[in-house]
Length: 289
Image (tube, rainbow, N blue to C red; front, top):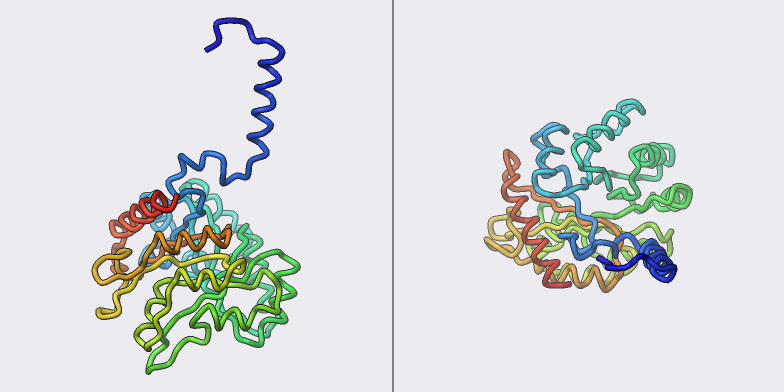
């Protein structure tokens, strides 16, 4: 507190400081107080697939997370404008807002694709996690350009009987999208990348992030025990995910997308485990800085 009246210089100095603060990017303001270090952290609502939307939102909020990537059980694609308004009010009331939607299929059917982009616009999101067919890209080029919504291709790893998902690695995805719109990239799923070891392909999630570079738009942050074939807490119970290494890679590529915690184990009640995943992520952010 000053022990003298404010001078003109004091006023000008304070105004300049306020102006400088408004010029800072949003992630830099209060970053020290942000437990996620500036990352936009969400929960993939599939984690709470056994619950209706109200309870899924309440459980997400109870985990200390303010965003969600929703899937179609919680917000049906066929929702009317009024229904979407009701959903958004429910989200605001719960303190958990939509940041992405998926995983959705896309094909060469432009009209069907457009309906999903229209839905995303109504929901107010900028990311659609996706499993597109190779012949869908001409349509997606147009829609990404028109809406500025990103298509984030999601790898699914092993698909059964020794086969692999068509988008099983960053290298495969990048080769397909490098000549297409800059808003077509990935939502890497660390759990499915880890699962590829079941087919003899040992993928490093941090290295996969670096491969995609500026085309990383989202991530499903997940760990998996390949022996028991179940999701686990990060780096525990047979898990191998190095969360700080992944965060460091995301920092290196100047990632501005969303990180969705996803946990497919214990669908009957995963909340306590999700809280532990949130804590591990927060501790990892502190390590990375």
